[in-house]
Image (cartoon, rainbow over all chains, first blue to last red; front, side, top):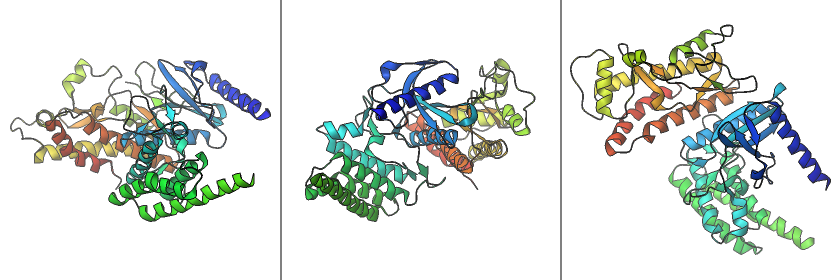
Length: 254
Length: 186
């Protein structure tokens, strides 16, 4: 109970901090749904003529981090991927808060929800793995490639949207993590393990991940010269199996 | 033509002509940027006499470049002849140099600059940019590098983006390496 109260307070504080900036913003509470899993406490509103999602940043270098994500989104879009369209970054007094505004996408579906509920999840997980390989082909790392950081946009059936690349980087400008491409792939398979993707049987789950994630990633990666695509694929499979084992062992003990 | 720094709370700078230019904060590089921009309202009658919008097909482009450079004879054939290639190289090299200078001196990089915002100026084949132009603060080196990559990728995409016919696509393919060269770090 105290957690939800704190969360509500924090979210409210962030909205207040944003409101103090002034500007042509009006809150649209009816658009709250969908943001409940956001660690950043994303909220929605109208900014001038635009309906926007507002992603707050707090703490160290908040403006720099917001600006970084803005540029990553722009680069990812310019490189031909589906992503959110940045509108602008606003910075609070003292530079302790920053807010990234992106155009609101109605009915966006997180891939985290897809793997829990949709019959065609396998195809979409496969497509997401290809998207990750294609990002790497362009020299771009996501930095936090968990399943929840990919999404489906309404009326776009053939592409997976890349969202929240705040820890992303590029070969040209540098990456946040060492071995950034392996890190992306491992984040992806680990998040799938947590979601229960592939089922409780380790052999079945391993086969599913191999088919839906590792094979499409390695195929595209090797064909397009992504560094260490094959060995990263192998490593990610082991990582998935370890994580799967740890999760299911824990459940048995519990 | 004015340059404004956005409200204190904003990282982005927006160029608009309805806000007075802040005389006190003028720096040589901001001045240079101001020189690059046409008025917010777009191309005035006077500007029309002095500038061309860069076209997206090669025949028109070559005509424009010939006229811009004062040539009276000869129109080269598509996709691009030697002279047009040379002129485009000069034009975009100058653009790349100017934007790099602004980045290094003022620590700002344009966001979302596209091909159709570049105008070529008659007589000396120099260029102007159509406002509004958003700038992002790139005080940190890593941000500067990422912003530059985003600028280049966005600009390159905009060349191909408007091409809807085979003819336009051939033209875009012809000028792409010229532009790309101008935007890569040396």
